[in-house]
Amino acid sequence: MPFQDKTIKCRDCGADFVWSASEQEFYQQKGFDNPPARCPSCRAARKQQRFGGQGRKMYDVVCAKCGKPTQVPFQPKDGRPVYCSDCFRQMKGR
Image (tube, rainbow, N blue to C red; front, side, top):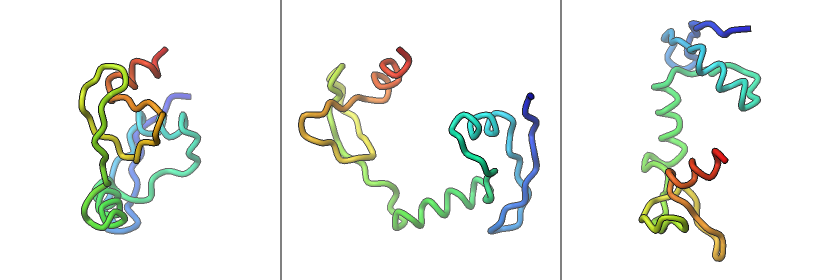
């Protein structure tokens, strides 16, 4: 069954926002059962609040495959390879 864009009212600000067909498909692929309750702006603001207004802490690493310096949103563990987003995407696609 093809998805269709839906208009949803934000629980925080009350504004209407569109939940696109592609977003609905993404939610289904991830196994999410409920539609978003907040508009993209309120979601971003809430995410910012959770991380203390400073954004997510990033860690500097060197890609284990190509050697390019990059940043990751998790603290790497010793002995475990860490990849840049390009190399990770290539490996995941296999």
